[in-house]
Length: 407
Image (tube, rainbow, N blue to C red; front, side, top):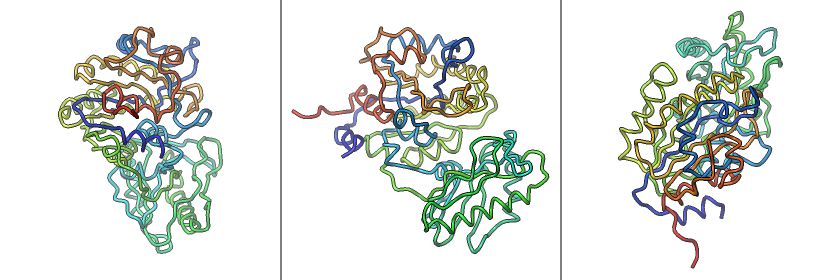
């Protein structure tokens, strides 16, 4: 029996309300002025809450391992991210509303800029979503089948899209066709077992054909693929924890992840601007407050700007979140967690293995031990350093949703 199964046996229902606020890629390392992005940000509201909260830090997978967003979130939802290895493709596919069956393999795609066989921009300059849609339509009009396998691409946001392959004999044990950094040659997928060789052949032919179709384009001139996935079998979050759960997110992958574990994904009206987007999410939170026990509330661009190595922009997103904290707190949750799914230091321009800052607030917190919400304070906080998958146990305990174990 793993931890999640054990906690499930102790879980009980009551009327308490829980909020998990995830600032994607929140953690950082000291950079400008010897401070992380969170330490440099002006966050009076989160600092005030920290003084009446338990602080700590979480390890998404195991110490030293850099997680993707999928494993990072699965851990926060109480799943063992090593046991449940889920390709990013299925999360992106479900997030944009793609129907996936047992005959499908899906992958997450990035439109990219190629030059002389070298990847010079993994995100093709972050094109407008409208341009993405047009490029997907163009590809679908030219490539509908490869060696008897149906091929279709679905637009996501900005540079992202989903590739769906449909047919017999498709397996998902492939290496990523993405070098993960610029200045490297265009990569192709390799089969990790004999059963996936057919899929690898189709994928690589698709990459080649797309590059030919888009050859000469200034920005979108090729594609990268990763996270090849069949549809996985995974226990459902609401059933495990006996809670009515909802997800509030704007990016397809995070919607897909929530949908995969059985959360209701609430529709967030699209608006322009970081503050306006978060306020739109807060309105959805308020409008649906009575219908759910647990809310997963996702903020994306702390991670995006971390990957772009833009310290000030990441810091600014943290400050925007802090400004709306009073409005979030006015909704009256019994338990509040503020954390991230992984660290994305701008100094590194990508995900890292560093533990993630964690704040946990309820009326049962051992408050008065911390001065602010940042990496330094969290490293010496009362929760200590925990596995991310233990966070759900803490939330449920503080919500009085776990029975006593043993006599």
